[in-house]
Image (cartoon, rainbow, N blue to C red):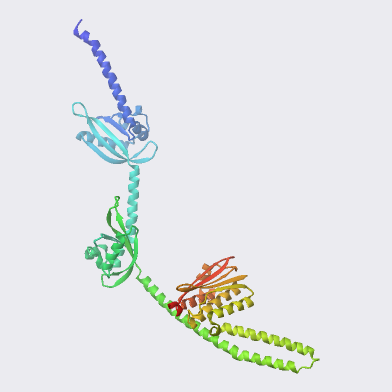
Length: 509
């Protein structure tokens, strides 16, 4: 038996072992490829697919692996359109010629009909002789990244348009005063035609834009010590030396590691608004002056009418009463009917005298000089309870020595107007009036259980529409330097609260 005959069974056995080992190695490679979530493929130098994973076969081409192996790009028209097959074939040929790698992005229509963006990473692999044997490729789905990039691009475009078109002056600067960027509105706000003109002139000295350069130092301190955006009003200087008032908003910009990068913010030119506010204040002061003069004139007219009622009508009624008494005494005993009519007339005259006195006192509370403020308030409450038929309670501290006579009259008028409003509008069954003396002020409260009203609607109407009652209360409170608060709720009554700072001799002790 020859040596070849002896070695033949051994060779056959070794070949079987090698084939089995190769099959096992191939199965391991296929299993390994299939576990990779990204599509993977490899082809020979003729462009025939020698292998791929499930992700490539099912997700990209929509074919079983067995239908792909051994085919070229042009053998799969149902999965790869002809024009794309031409492009891919040219790229593969170029790469095989240079024996290198390729990286590119491409949009691919996947098996589910959806077009997705992929990043291709392809490279040549060599045979045992070091010659190109084929191409292996890996595809990375970057669709979400592309969408994010597109969203970011659109967001940046929107911000750029906002940055350039908004009327607010937007800026970015360093803490030490280097201006990094401004928008056109910022440049124009300071008298420059374009942002680059401003940056060329004062780009390294942001403090030059302030009327008081120390203002920026103060603002920087506020920004750097605050985690929240800051807001302040500041005076700025334009290129021509004129100034304007700006509403200044700014904040810190940090990186992901919370490290400070730069300052960012915007300025709103509020010069016109400030001028309007000043004009409005002047107009309000003039109106308050006229209003106070009107109230003083009204008080003087009331005093004059009160004196006429007291001196003229009061005396005439007293004389008429004396005449009626004289006539009644002269009647005979048998003139019973006339005597009754005289008694009735005398009772009517007495009511007229009482009414005249009440009206006279209401018009001009000269009784304050006799009864002081507290006594006058007590008299007013008793009189109100009598003619209004509303249960009224009074709790009051002694405040007689705290206010001047003119101030006492104003306080009296406020209480008089408040009670009059209750009688006229509230339909209340009871009223509680409290007057409390505190350390620095006097607190007065008139609370009723009437029908209430919509306070916001009433206060937002023009004075001509809501009447002079509330306006007079507000103005008289202002004349005292006090604070008037009115709260009301429909069906639950109204509360008028007045806080008056103590300015009398007692308040100064």
